[in-house]
Amino acid sequence: MKKVMSNKLVIALYVLPALFLITAVIYGPMILTGYYGLMDWTGIGEMTFIGLDNYKELIVDARFWDSAWHSLLLAIFSTLSLAVYLTISLILAGNIKGSNLLRKIYLIPMLMSSVAIAQLWIKIYDPNNGMLNSVLKMFGVENPPAWLADPKYVLAAIIIAILWQYAGFYIIIYYAALKGVPTELEEAAKIDGATPLQIAYKIKVPLIAGVIKVTIVLAIVGSLKYFDLIYVMTGGGPNGSSEVIASYMYKKAFDTYQFGYGSAVAFFLLIITLVVTWITRKFTADDEEVQY
Amino acid sequence: MASTTQPVEKRSIASRIGMVLLYIALGIVAVFQIYPLIWLFIFSLKTNTEVFGNSPFALPEDPRWENYVRAWTDGNIDMYFFNSVWITAVSVIATVLLASFATFAITRMNWKLSKPVLGLFMIGLMVPIHSAIIPLFSFYNDMGLINHPLSLIITYTAFNLPITIMILLGFYITLPREIEEAAVMDGASIHRMFFQITLPMTSPVIATTAIINMIYNWNEFVFVNTFISSDKWKTLTVGINNFVGQYLTDWGAIGATLIISIVPILIAFLILSDRIVEGIAAGSVKG
Image (tube, rainbow over all chains, first blue to last red; front, side, top):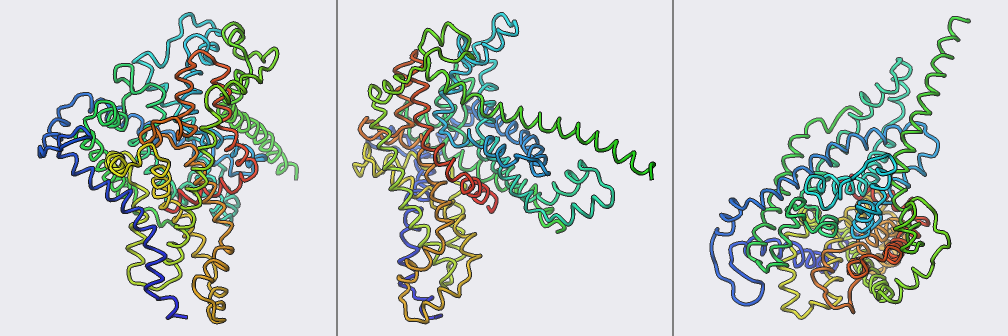
């Protein structure tokens, strides 16, 4: 048995195809992105080595920092919204009839492509015939804004669509975690006279701290690299007011053919993603192995 | 006696009101999540006159199913739809098979590097696709794979391996080894054991990962948008995006197109909702 299960040839045969694929498609290109970031390159033809010039340009590129700020705002709001999803999940995980159905309804937007969501919300925000402005007009608002064309509102409008997309995802995660909390603790707390609110926030929430930590990482990292919906809804506009790091990178590379500079932005994005993941995990560590 | 029952009754009235409020809150969230889709379906059946003239909440006077016919035939949606179906299917099969092989070797076989290799797969979860897309584009360009569906299949398969392995792993670890061991005792080869025992035994989790993969691939946008420019190989996401760009003011046809793109996933969800929910929960939490 042991001998069969340590056959090197079989191990290689089973692991190498997958390993080769992620190396060739994920890790190789990831490293190459860092390398291309040191080049002046239009995507076709010769590359010229220019050292850290792209990164020096990046540091003083106001448009890039605007986009980074928008990504940060998205990350902040996504993280704050987790508190709402957690509250909803706490209610659902109590003895609520129909919680199964509600959970599934909440999840439906998450099943749609970002393109479909973007196109749907473009219609919702349509200045003349959109759902939102029709409602506002019904309530007597005279000149409701053209949400996606207005630099003041565009980012908020997009963030709401993104929250709509992901709400169900986080609710599902929290719900699953809450259902895994042993019921004995809740029973004991009830006997001791704890209110439902106390049970929720003093017992259940600390017990799923590990999961909350993971969702914080997911929300922050997911926001920093967010792309599809913004690219389709506004293309980063009007005039850069909804640009995020990933859409800025994509434009530089595939619209203006600055592959070298685009790579530098992409590599920067990778570094922030990894650093933020590490910091968030570090920051929220320790209290993971609570009680039980 | 009376003094003890009264507070209990009071509390139960209060808690009943509390429950009603909770249900209202949950209901509002549900409406917020579902109503935009209902609105989309309603305007997909309207004429432009109805969309522009009447209240957006009015039902269509006479449902225009021909909007769907127009979207399907005029907008090449049939072609994009077919591309999405087969590219999704091939990538899902490749991912699940390769991931099963790797997970089997990592959890069942004895070798020194199994931990670091697993770590390598898991780190892949964190890599943003944007930090790989420029070199991938240039590589596929050199290989003549730009405008070729293989570029999508290879990319989807690779990028879905980490999450698939992660979900499979949780199941493999809980699976007893005795049946597999007995098979080896009986002289079955390791490959026979894998295909005839392990794969069938893991079919529930294979279904979960397959459906999660299917949703990812079906909805993928960036890679198609970057690697495919000829209409012939575009998938539904990029296809509908172009279609909407061309038919900007035809709300009915746009609505119909969007509904067409959502329906397959919705059907899968109706049939397999528990698996999807479980897959999403499992896939995210264990990292």
